[in-house]
Image (cartoon, rainbow, N blue to C red; front, top):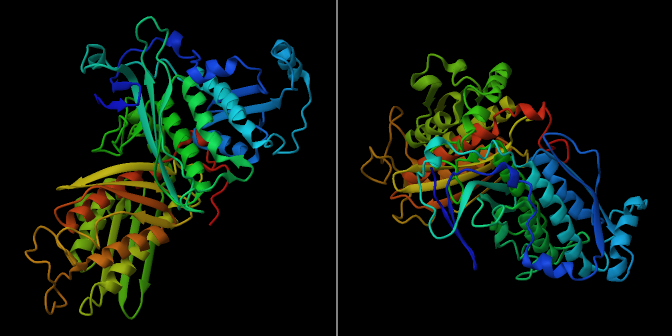
Length: 547
């Protein structure tokens, strides 16, 4: 069981898998800000609020702020929760007439053709978003399945300590990668305490501002017609009314649009995992397993080898082959996504055989393939007597192209995941999106590695200097700059977005490279997994993943 402490300015929490009272799951929580707002006449009412698990809502999303509509739609695509809601502006009336106005609004036919009909005046957007957060939060609270929240026997027996703060039933963490942003979301369900009917929800961390760097340091104040300063009000009410402890942390992000989009997608994916009883393997603040691709009490039933997802992958039998020859290299690649090595059944290592003539490159791809659970056979004859550049680059290009070919349209796939990997002292987390929009962003200690290493040196090597004159039969060294180029070529040709975050630097660049390979492989395994609930449809609000 995973115990983790959350600290906010007013509260601390300890994570413990414990029993949840099913009758409390749909309780709407009210924050102090909500109580204050209740004392003044409301300007907006939300009607036809809906949240249907694993199905479409029969109601549209019509908040009156176009960009906000687009963000709410991420719940449909990434939480797989059918969301609908219409915001109606109440006529300016006294508090005594507010109730009558709200009732009248139910029968009014609002003109929804103007997608930004409620965007002015901008100072009203905080109240509008608060009402949306309250309406959807109440619906989300009702969705959280009581059975999924039940603890295992050892948790119920008290395997763990509550500490001084509130006990958390379960926590889910997800990071969403966009090409110019990475946001982490942690959602936790607090257990009932004292005389309270249920645990209270709260937004304990919100570090999204500034929204990009244009202009710096202020960032964007509006995206479309939406005021970015109002977003906090939405997430505060969403947390309070859903009963969830919510943390939204910007890891990096220069583009304001993508920072906001990453936040909504990360929340949506974390919510999906919370409902499923699964979690990412990224560790961090969540309850995932940092030594595996994923965790949570239902992970194996949803994604494991006995799951419908795994069976669907085996039925697809996705594979690809590629051969390419130039005056510099001659390469053959065979890759099988499902079954762990059907195309390389005679290869050593359970369907993995890598022979490139560059030792650390072999280690990198063999480790990646093992953690991804794929069969991979790579043979390369290259001009390593020149240096490692041509072989390293061309192998990464060929493997990336083969991977992209095997993945096909990516329709029906899980698409996004984050996972951590360790090697020696190094620890790296990779967040991946099979986006068809290639982008690699990382903070790995390569150019600034502590040892000043020029080459990626494995444990069997005694020096960071390359052989003065490697023979055609010896293994060529891999330069640090080419390791970075390998990552970039693999991501680019694989048509994916990848963020690599170094949690701990290795004692050598080799350790950092191997930790990256582990995390990359684990993330790829989960991104490539078939989500049978999507019924072959693309996990995107656009309906397609256009290049």
